[in-house]
Length: 59
Length: 412
View (cartoon, rainbow over the protein chains, first blue to last red):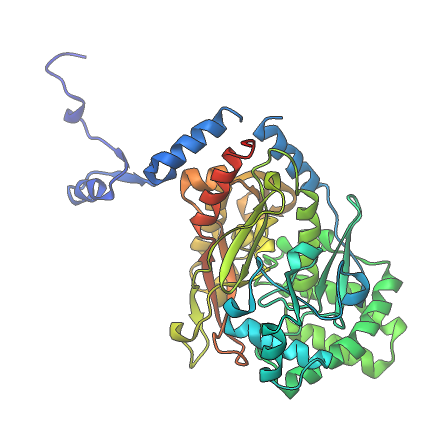
């Protein structure tokens, strides 16, 4: 890719993972976007993540 | 054994199970440990002082039916003085919708898992509206209970024996492809049941009694539910106590708490306060009248039916609320938290994919997706009956507690 080219020079389509407000901003700018329903494992609870990691070793 | 291998073993035992509805017998003759004053209830164990209004109403009706008391006050006296032996039906291979009350004289369906030699039990389904399981106990309800046990049960028993039993698993597999989910939509399964039984009823009964029985089963709408629940319990009991398995083998509510049991954690219950139900109310009722979630009927979800099979039963949303798209999305979401797919219950709208089977506590905690349950809504005041239907979800706390216990299960 040439230095003076940017991927944002061409039409883009976006998959948004995480905060839906980001997707809303893109929709408002008429940029095609799909919202992916993602959340951190165990809601981000570190104790539960540690338990899941322990059990992953037994999987 | 690894967890995944244990889960595979657990699921295999559930998948290969059968459910033959073969008999109807008095509870005291077949349910283990049924003493003279045993009162079995739905959900995890709960003390009288914590029992909700509908459950107390059901117990009142049952005690009056048994001849142990004449008034609610006398029943309360029996309960508080320790005269009644309360226990969870799940502990006795038994099961029941809503309050799920079973007492010694009640006739129960006997369903056998012939592969694993497990017998399970449930009372006969009374119908909709003002019924015992919703806490109603007036003379009309007790008269109906008496008729069911003294007239309907013997006729049905004779028909079942003549038929050599009804293969519930096969019937359910057909119904799932006819728009039923076997929890709150049983139009096809109830009709298939009648089709299976009618010739045998005619052969064993007099005309008037047979007409009355067919009319009752038809108008009850969900008559097959209790037998299917017993069949589901027999399948899940076969998958219980598999060492190192994280599969949920019981998900049950008593109107006070919701509880789960996990295959690799024995008989321990993991409980949390029972949630309220979001749904559609009958005219004249609203959320202020509703009881928290109650009943053993979530056994259907636990075995891959109910909400888990909603993609094949979009018409159920007319009863519980929502859209056909939501019904599809619910089933698709449940695949995220299960370890397998049913080999017998297949859903045409999902390209005949098997229903989600084997709720895995690891996946529930990791994704935050909890099992969705579609269910009836009982009035919190005893004696009123069902006031609506809707959706709820098992509390995440049941699964986080279970995960913690599982991770530490080998600690001394």
